[in-house]
Length: 295
Image (cartoon, rainbow, N blue to C red; front, side, top):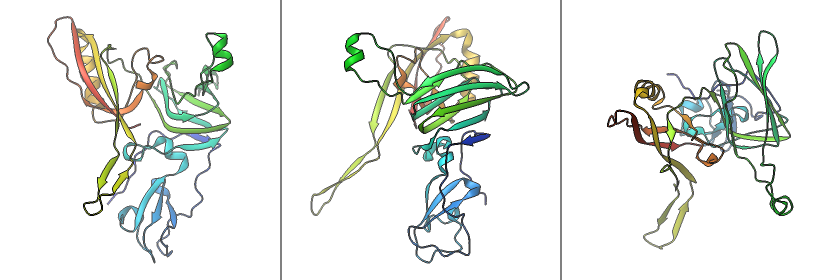
């Protein structure tokens, strides 16, 4: 039996982030209720649910152990049901293998500033550099300057990097940092996002009432984000679009609408629930696709 936890691409270098200090799991140790351990091969923290808990490998014994979270350094790389926790640190530096990638996206993040550098591994030369801030800056009027606060930026997407066969992406943050999800990849054009696209926030909390007392119990789960995207592309792009959909269907993708600076709240990490491609026009194909957000 093989136990696994999925993560996005891990950095090749990391500083400024401290992992939890619990001991690694040991089969001969007797754990009590509420004790923690680390399963290093899964980069995960588990919490004991039993008294006299020993010789129970945590991933194989869900009644004895509760999966608590990925390690702090891996929280930003978590996939699917483990998305939601944040990697936290101070003056963080990350380096990633950036061969054949062109974009970087950070969601649910909080930071002061970040310097993004693409480095040629062969020469050590910085071939692309971009600095970003964790808040809006610049004003349109004196009123804004004196009375309106700066707004925080909770998500950042940048796709101006060069296609390169052998490069490193270095992210250097200043000050306190928290990152919910960090993904690297290649941007694929799936057509033009049209007006008629919508974003829906669905509350997944629930309320149950006691049949005896009538008291209500509220279980709060937060919300999910659903994008209903109206997309148009040329009919001659049918094969290219269909091949791209086949490669990414069932996998997490970052959806980025056109003019994403204006509609940045529609940038989500999610998956296509459906992507119909109707052949009803000799020149243009218009479709309505659904993206279910996981972050």
